[in-house]
Length: 459
Ligand code: B12
Ligand SMILES: C[S@@+](CC[C@H](N)C(=O)[O-])C[C@H]1O[C@@H](n2cnc3c(N)ncnc32)[C@H](O)[C@@H]1O
Ligand code: SF4
Image 1 (tube, rainbow, N blue to C red):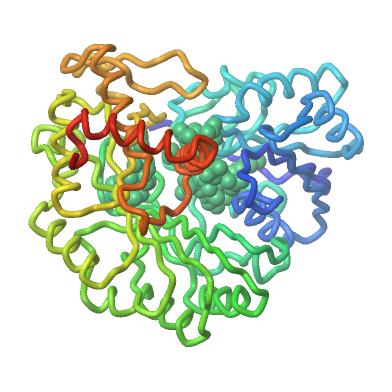
Image 2 (cartoon, rainbow, N blue to C red):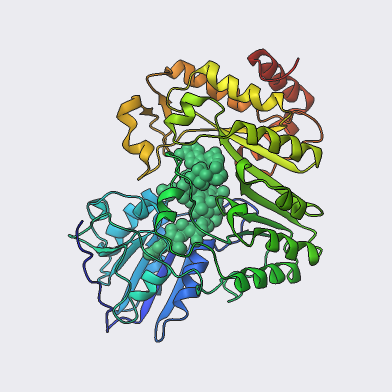
């Protein structure tokens, strides 16, 4: 494995323009969590002035020239510039970097974010104007570029890029953007109590990101203080980003803290059925929780193909218990999986329906950068669409026509099964929700008819 090039803190630089190009939903705060976490950490660096800028690329009136002008207006002769690359802003970043250089910017350009984190070696060829690349959670590594010898792991330079281990971050001491006041209180917040995941599902990027985290949970005191701040500030809707919330050893205590404070808002938590215990479910009682379970498939050959052996006995027991306790939950599946067929996808949907799962969401498989699934695409002859965010539309077990059938089945799931169902409001849910509202009962009836015809709802 190549040795990390030493990245020495520049003695001349004490000024950083930090740009965030976000994708936001209407209820999202103006500052994204990743950007806020970087700012909170950089505030601890002596002698460093940071100019944070953020824009939402999906907002009406977004204009890349405006971003360029804002960045140029914020830079000084000794500034560095850093930006996070995500799939939704990649085209803008690739336009912006050469434009900055053409405009005469000579400072270091530092790049991080998922488009860098999961990239194989050679990312410097994709962004030739950038000088430094940081793979992984970058708070400490970015701060290290401006203080002392710096963190070397996960940091590479143009001309010597490699995809070794991602950056290491000390979660136990990481400052909280909530408590540091970087994220002003808003009604809706995204929040994290831990990072990474111990499972190894081959389609998922979390396995890689968590692999190197020595300490994967935030300090207990920080988390509990954030809970208190949310309650005090009137936050009413919290989307927890942890890939498996209940795997935090403090999960039950965190829920207890919310309950003790009589938190009246909604808590959306991603979980795994296998991790449901009666103690955890007890801790959910009295709170407005929405549990979001990934299941992906109930078919054994697909489970093997994605390195995720769901224990269906445990899943079934958990579903029965959730229903008994009337806890609101949803289950997500993936279509376009290796070895999948229209019939096997339908079988997964039916399995959930037979257990009375009201809210099922099905998403198309994406070949995410750096995942085992992406590397083994040839084995299953996985072919992708040419959308901006490509999805798998063909394989050696299903044709493009089959895929369109699966897509129709997935879309037909988006109408609530019963009037009591309340989803947690994903993008598709919102879209179909408004479609159903606009079209009234006719649209609902039509989509329900499709579901009945497709064999995934009782007539
Ligand atoms: C919240 C979220 C959203 C929100 C964004 C709202 C918002 N403004 O925050 C919403 C719901 C809108 C969203 C939508 C989508 N998302 Co999303 N989302 C997430 C999620 C769950 C959390 C992001 C987060 O806050 N993480 C916590 C912070 C601390 O981590 P971070 O953002 O990665 O930032 C760290 C590093 O990346 C790095 N970093 C970030 N910026 C910078 C900048 C510099 C200079 C440096 C050095 C480092 C650096 O350091 C940061 C701190 O450690 C992530 C998964 C995850 N758990 O991270 C996916 C994720 C970001 N989303 C992803 C995707 C694919 C999507 C969708 C395309 C899904 C879809 N198919 O519809 C859509 C995009 C919009 C669209 N076209 O429809 C991918 C992005 C992959 C990629 N290569 O960019 C992720 C990683 C999930 C995944 N593995 O699939 N998403
Ligand atoms: C990151 S997972 C976390 C939830 C839970 N840990 C689980 O096991 O599913 C959240 C959801 O993202 C979706 N997801 C993740 N990677 C995906 C991919 N490559 N293609 C399609 N959907 C994906 C899946 O629906 C998954 O359930
Ligand atoms: S899908 Fe869920 S369980 Fe599997 S690796 Fe990703 S976060 Fe972990």
